Length: 136
Image 1 (spheres, helix red, strand yellow):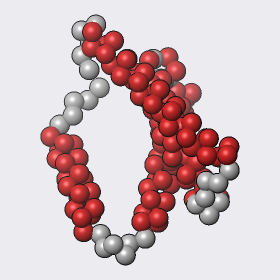
Image 2 (spheres, rainbow, N blue to C red):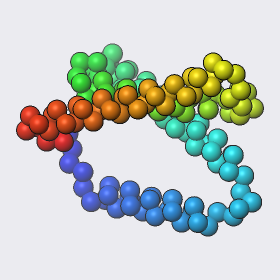
Image 3 (cartoon, helix red, strand yellow):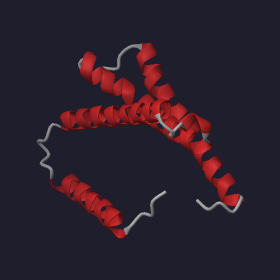
Image 4 (cartoon, rainbow, N blue to C red):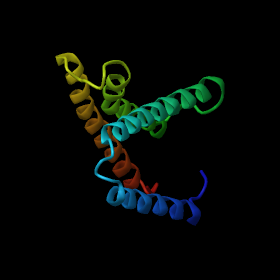
Protein backbone atom coordinates (compact mmCIF):
# COMPACT_ATOMS: atom_id res chain seq x y z
CA UNK A 1 0.00 0.00 0.00
CA UNK A 2 1.09 3.55 -0.64
CA UNK A 3 1.63 6.04 2.13
CA UNK A 4 -0.81 8.96 2.31
CA UNK A 5 1.08 12.22 1.87
CA UNK A 6 0.23 15.78 2.81
CA UNK A 7 -1.29 16.83 -0.59
CA UNK A 8 -4.10 14.33 -0.02
CA UNK A 9 -4.91 15.82 3.38
CA UNK A 10 -4.63 19.36 1.99
CA UNK A 11 -7.06 18.57 -0.83
CA UNK A 12 -9.42 16.84 1.59
CA UNK A 13 -9.32 19.86 3.91
CA UNK A 14 -9.89 22.25 0.99
CA UNK A 15 -12.86 20.15 -0.09
CA UNK A 16 -14.30 20.31 3.42
CA UNK A 17 -13.87 24.08 3.53
CA UNK A 18 -15.49 24.42 0.08
CA UNK A 19 -18.40 22.27 1.29
CA UNK A 20 -18.90 24.54 4.31
CA UNK A 21 -18.65 27.72 2.23
CA UNK A 22 -21.19 26.39 -0.28
CA UNK A 23 -23.54 25.47 2.56
CA UNK A 24 -23.50 29.00 3.90
CA UNK A 25 -23.47 30.89 0.60
CA UNK A 26 -25.88 29.04 -1.69
CA UNK A 27 -28.96 31.21 -2.15
CA UNK A 28 -32.12 30.01 -0.45
CA UNK A 29 -33.80 30.03 -3.85
CA UNK A 30 -31.58 27.14 -4.97
CA UNK A 31 -33.54 24.04 -5.94
CA UNK A 32 -32.03 21.69 -3.37
CA UNK A 33 -34.05 18.79 -4.75
CA UNK A 34 -31.88 18.97 -7.86
CA UNK A 35 -28.73 19.22 -5.74
CA UNK A 36 -29.81 16.15 -3.75
CA UNK A 37 -30.76 14.24 -6.89
CA UNK A 38 -27.36 14.91 -8.43
CA UNK A 39 -25.60 13.75 -5.27
CA UNK A 40 -27.75 10.61 -5.09
CA UNK A 41 -27.01 9.71 -8.69
CA UNK A 42 -23.28 10.41 -8.27
CA UNK A 43 -23.00 8.37 -5.04
CA UNK A 44 -24.90 5.46 -6.59
CA UNK A 45 -22.94 5.59 -9.84
CA UNK A 46 -19.49 5.79 -8.26
CA UNK A 47 -20.28 3.04 -5.73
CA UNK A 48 -21.44 0.78 -8.53
CA UNK A 49 -18.38 1.69 -10.63
CA UNK A 50 -16.09 0.80 -7.70
CA UNK A 51 -17.75 -2.61 -7.34
CA UNK A 52 -17.58 -3.32 -11.08
CA UNK A 53 -13.93 -2.20 -11.42
CA UNK A 54 -12.74 -4.09 -8.33
CA UNK A 55 -14.60 -7.23 -9.38
CA UNK A 56 -13.28 -6.94 -12.93
CA UNK A 57 -9.73 -6.62 -11.65
CA UNK A 58 -10.30 -9.74 -9.57
CA UNK A 59 -11.73 -11.75 -12.44
CA UNK A 60 -8.99 -10.76 -14.88
CA UNK A 61 -6.09 -10.11 -12.53
CA UNK A 62 -4.83 -10.55 -9.02
CA UNK A 63 -7.13 -8.20 -7.07
CA UNK A 64 -9.58 -10.83 -5.85
CA UNK A 65 -11.56 -9.00 -3.17
CA UNK A 66 -13.46 -12.17 -2.26
CA UNK A 67 -10.26 -13.77 -0.96
CA UNK A 68 -9.50 -11.19 1.75
CA UNK A 69 -11.53 -9.84 4.61
CA UNK A 70 -10.57 -6.21 3.93
CA UNK A 71 -11.45 -6.47 0.23
CA UNK A 72 -14.76 -8.15 1.03
CA UNK A 73 -15.65 -5.49 3.58
CA UNK A 74 -14.74 -2.73 1.10
CA UNK A 75 -17.21 -4.21 -1.38
CA UNK A 76 -19.82 -4.57 1.38
CA UNK A 77 -19.28 -0.91 2.32
CA UNK A 78 -19.86 0.13 -1.30
CA UNK A 79 -22.94 -2.09 -1.40
CA UNK A 80 -24.23 -0.44 1.77
CA UNK A 81 -24.03 2.92 -0.01
CA UNK A 82 -25.98 1.40 -2.88
CA UNK A 83 -28.57 0.02 -0.47
CA UNK A 84 -29.12 3.43 1.11
CA UNK A 85 -28.95 5.69 -1.93
CA UNK A 86 -29.86 3.24 -4.73
CA UNK A 87 -33.64 3.34 -4.16
CA UNK A 88 -33.54 7.16 -4.11
CA UNK A 89 -31.43 7.30 -7.28
CA UNK A 90 -33.84 4.87 -8.99
CA UNK A 91 -36.78 7.03 -7.89
CA UNK A 92 -35.05 10.11 -9.32
CA UNK A 93 -34.40 8.39 -12.63
CA UNK A 94 -37.56 6.35 -13.10
CA UNK A 95 -40.35 7.51 -10.79
CA UNK A 96 -40.36 11.30 -10.65
CA UNK A 97 -38.36 11.29 -7.41
CA UNK A 98 -41.05 9.44 -5.46
CA UNK A 99 -40.56 6.52 -3.07
CA UNK A 100 -44.24 5.77 -2.63
CA UNK A 101 -44.81 2.01 -2.46
CA UNK A 102 -44.35 -0.15 0.61
CA UNK A 103 -41.72 -2.39 -1.00
CA UNK A 104 -39.73 0.53 -2.36
CA UNK A 105 -39.87 2.27 1.02
CA UNK A 106 -38.76 -0.92 2.76
CA UNK A 107 -35.89 -1.29 0.29
CA UNK A 108 -34.75 2.20 1.26
CA UNK A 109 -35.30 1.80 5.01
CA UNK A 110 -33.84 -1.71 5.04
CA UNK A 111 -30.79 -0.37 3.23
CA UNK A 112 -30.08 1.85 6.22
CA UNK A 113 -30.14 -1.17 8.52
CA UNK A 114 -27.91 -3.11 6.13
CA UNK A 115 -25.45 -0.20 6.12
CA UNK A 116 -25.46 -0.12 9.92
CA UNK A 117 -24.64 -3.83 10.08
CA UNK A 118 -21.87 -3.57 7.48
CA UNK A 119 -20.22 -0.62 9.24
CA UNK A 120 -20.50 -2.40 12.59
CA UNK A 121 -18.71 -5.39 11.01
CA UNK A 122 -16.03 -3.04 9.67
CA UNK A 123 -15.53 -1.64 13.17
CA UNK A 124 -15.21 -5.18 14.54
CA UNK A 125 -12.69 -6.04 11.80
CA UNK A 126 -10.64 -2.95 12.66
CA UNK A 127 -10.72 -3.69 16.39
CA UNK A 128 -9.74 -7.32 15.79
CA UNK A 129 -6.83 -6.37 13.51
CA UNK A 130 -5.62 -3.63 15.85
CA UNK A 131 -5.65 -6.14 18.72
CA UNK A 132 -3.32 -8.43 16.75
CA UNK A 133 -0.64 -5.75 16.46
CA UNK A 134 -1.48 -5.12 12.79
CA UNK A 135 -2.34 -1.48 13.33
CA UNK A 136 -5.32 0.21 11.78
